[in-house]
Image (cartoon, rainbow, N blue to C red):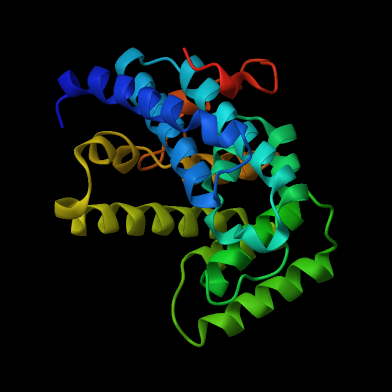
Length: 253
């Protein structure tokens, strides 16, 4: 996708986000609406990174996504939350905003929304929240991963060995699993290219916020890491999100 369309994609994404602000501010938004709002910020951030080659605005948009989602969680009923669908949690981590990621983890639902999300999706996010932000013990983490394995019923999920490598501090295993995770993600976008929007193909298909977040977490563990991974460019890891007022997501410029 030619970069000539990126300025339009960025402008449209921010306009779409502004269009959702009234329902968010009224605390009348569903989780799906909040995720759409956060998705617009993510797309705008990635597009700006690709246009400028600098990460400051990219990190700002991801931070705003995380903060808006944390604000939503604070006012939402527990049964309206689905933890397996919390990409803004990864936005905050990818921006280096661990405080907001921790707030999302604390406000999230910590039980599986059966019938509304896949159990393995819930367990993947729940493990990361517990392991890195909620002070879970080694035993608790291992029990979550045992439940994760059981939920898969013999199916393969590259995220499970990735989590296992994190809990056992297996840097080599993490590296291998991360590459597999990113490769599978690339294959999914390629397979579904005809049904994806041009905006996503030009932005999120080429940069993995989840991958960035996982690299950030591995850095905290002291793992030796490569400079770049597929769709995890090193420039996106330079620095951290700027200090902003916690409600900066309400004023999108």
